[in-house]
Image: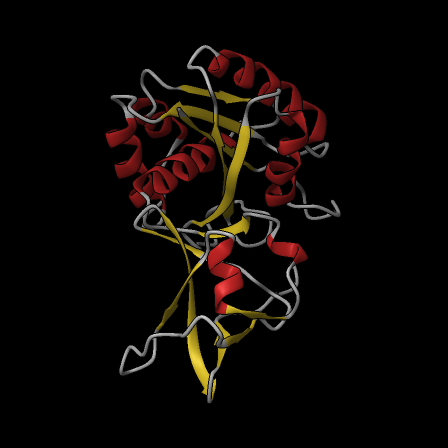
Length: 239
């Protein structure tokens, strides 16, 4: 069974870590038999009326568990984790759902709203009816982004991976076949939609961040030369 754990607003402007790192660190808490499939960053609405820390993003850790009964164990561990790891002065929120939960449809729609308009805690609580959602400090505004992270990730079509198959350990240039071996599909976004060959090389520019497309891990690339591709995007500093 697949479980989605949404985290948001665990940092402050003065902290040396972001919500994405808090979500990634949760892997160390996993009980035996549970496996982190990946951590997906979700971009929400940019608007000066929203009190976000830097880029108004939230994160969802996707966990595969061997037994549905493990969900309650994960929930307990996630609460412990977010309360311990969140920065003082932050407004952390947590949302936990399983694949097949009947309320996921509403949560997916809510995630779409969070990417386009300003929403409230009340709306987050309504969308998460029947699904665990909880605030763990400050204003508890983090429940909004946490719920959105779960909804958008569960839809299978949004966000970029900030953790998957040790993506930070890959070299700056890597063969298409090696990425495929680790579950990352390389897809060309050039005009003619050329097919990257297994022996072609991808220049990640030191920032390998696949996207979540169709429930799959997809790395969009552009051609840079014969048998050479370039990953899209690059790391930006926290503002």
